Image (cartoon, rainbow over all chains, first blue to last red; front, side, top):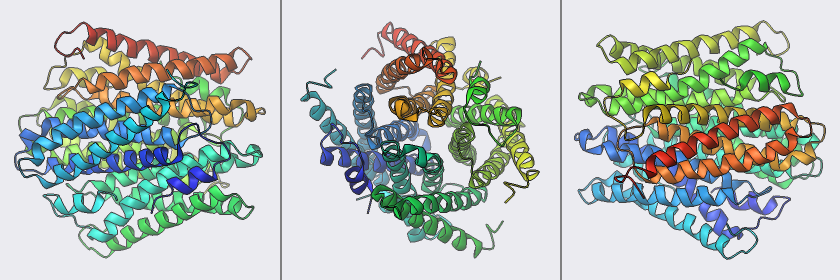
Length: 141
Length: 141
Length: 141
Length: 141
């Protein structure tokens, strides 16, 4: 359904990142950005919107960071180690947002449950990129 | 795989747009943004990069417009008719980018073929939103 | 303070748009995106947040569209008429968001007054691009 | 000219960050995002585009990260320490992009000189945020 895998394979340059790890992280980032954008909006329509402040803020931040990260991982020309810092910041942002969503999910807010799943998956996918890069001496920071 | 459908269904507010039409447009926009981001980068690594100028520019524009449109369609609180203009501009951008990618696809550049498919699908999905809104007297522009 | 003018002047390609009109639109778009992002967040901290739903939604949409438009206008390689549709959609979005902000500004909410000014300026700047392009037979849609 | 300062002052919540440090970082991020977007496009029009690969890629990455960071810093509701990781990643990205631009500036490419200045200023502004936060025990990571 997404085009990340065929585009990565057809790229004239070879990436220093494992194809499957990279494709999963790209998908997870774009999916999480969409989920966080939708969840922030759904929070805004909740009756107890006052309690959703922190969730809205973290979801908006997380959407911004996931999009930046997903776009950066989509580029494989001249990959730079600075990109690794973004991927790690993205994992941290997804952790913070996922924790806040989990709190609301436990109180029965279904859209926060879905968003939490998107954040957890994206956190794992970003951590997999970090691990994959850490094991490559050439790009190690 | 994506969270657009469950999030749209769990939203406390009802959207004036048909759920399936909206979910497909959201997915098509985010997928096209990723494809265009990756294709611009792949173009940059082509031997005949000089011939790819217009494709790179249109892909970057298309990625920007698709992300804005995908995020706007992900919000269902207080939908405004101004959003319709963005959706229509997104369809036009996808048409322009898809045509340029088709030109390169016909010369055997595989990543442009994939990107063209993403653009065509997104153009159709945005046009389906326009048609769906045009038939609703309340939001008709 | 911003780099839009020197970058536009140092670009190897000539733009079909008037330099001053384009630079003002770029600045207005980025400034409005920042203002709308900050205003949506300030709305969220208002005591009567329930009344700010529509303002938050429109500000988030407007930030997304202004960023896409500001980035597209920052590119002068191979300008395409599809970009004109975005600029026009941006003017409409700024109009809708500016009207909503004006409503809250009249009730004494200072941050909405500032955001309204950013939206009005961006609407004018985008309309100036449209007028400038409409008078050029070559790119007329 | 920009609205960052009046919006920060009119916000109902107080930020844990120093107002001047935050406003300068917001401006520097949005300005750098615009400069990098324009510079990537100007690079593409250079005769020796083949030599500009890395500069284009880093400029596109830097624009994405600066926009995410500028938006995150524009929000002052419920600031979270995860945001600090983004600000630090932004400083690193600006460093990498500024270094690459400096290389081309030294060969007489004027638009890379301007972009380098934008990157250096944004790097400093992000580092000032980090220093400011590091001295606050409550948010220290």
